[in-house]
Image (cartoon, rainbow, N blue to C red; front, side, top):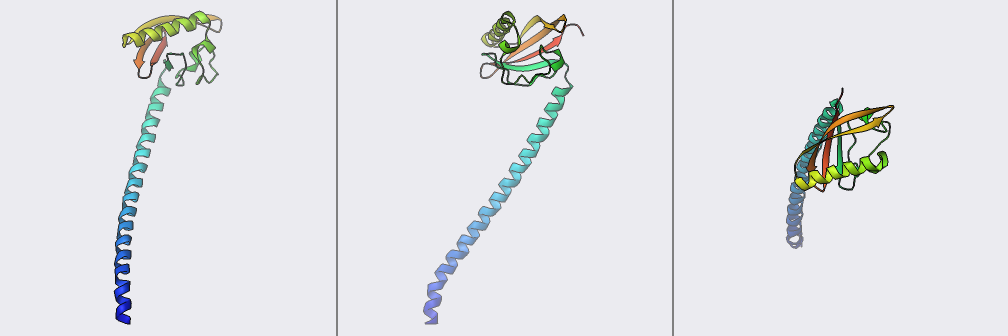
Length: 155
């Protein structure tokens, strides 16, 4: 009887051992993947911090604007904007500037996208009680967007 029980149990023990081994391997793979992802996350965070520091050090205005005029990235130098204390993400150019300024900007965005090259564009904005001139460089990006970098022409 004992021999019969052992013969019945042995295949099950072998199966349990085999599955336990597979689970250990799978667990080890998951732990390695978790470590790799954690490392990638740390690298991404460090990279993001560096880029943020670079942008914060800039005195130019840097925006990403799509063809519809939607502003997609926070500017770097808000004191030079028309409404400097306003979070502009999710708004459009038309929200901030008079029709003729917004139309002019959209034409320049379209021009950069059509040409698929960086264009230069000078413009002025009423800021406070004065008119401030800017020099902009507008470069095409994917998805009908441009990066708009401008600096005050008179610093």
